Image 1 (tube, rainbow, N blue to C red):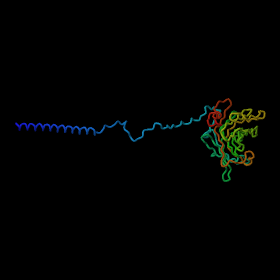
Image 2 (cartoon, rainbow, N blue to C red; image 1 turned 90 degrees about the horizontal axis):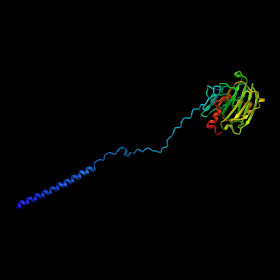
Image 3 (cartoon, one colour; image 1 turned 180 degrees about the vertical axis):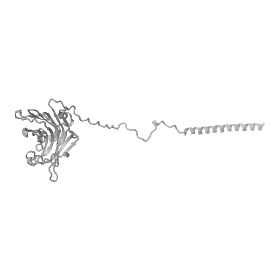
Image 4 (cartoon, rainbow, N blue to C red; image 1 turned 45 degrees about the vertical axis):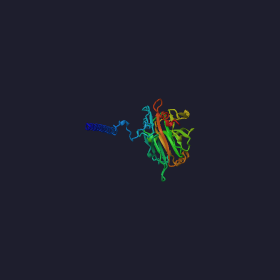
Length: 318
């Protein structure tokens, strides 16, 4: 009986130990399994939340705007009988031709030849240059003239004359023997030796008519201004910046009658007329600048230099 009790006790103890071993093994297995779960890689994050080394675009960067091109310069209306030339940027060779005379005939009052290379186109003007002579040569000058001729009407120019001594800056109408006509002329001229004055005169058949040297209240060589004259059958009237400044008495005027070309001129005189134009004191170069020329028949409503002078901002501070 004792032997049987001992065997039963031993078997019970073995069962208990076995159960304990199973419990411990199960716990170890659970711990191992849980550690495997904790060390498993995390699923990838959505791309929207992934941080990168690339900088985010700045939201306050100023935007550079490209300016629109300037509107094309076109007059509103010019009738076939009228004439309008915007000289900012150059002249149209269909309308103008450069003078090319050498001016070397005896008693010629010009101090040198006309040279086309002295005509320089700039963005806001056309420059006619007077250049000093080199190596004993005479000075060179510049002049352009219209291919068409004109008659009675309003003649206008926007120009900036030279203020240098010995220079003549001119806007005028002219016809003469070279075209088979009498010498007829209407002038607006500036002498550099008198920087605050403008001269008005006219010729009929080579004879000088009424004239005036008008004193301005500004220096014309410092800015663009508007100059004009009305050529009528019985009188000529001159204007500065749309204000009448000279009207000779009609009973003393003998008005020319020949249709004429328009001339723009920058020149210096020969030695024998230094008493009028003064000695050359312009250094290496002097410039006479033009922005506009127009002719408008009376009662015509064509666009003219006075319209451009009123509209263009570069002239508003004058």
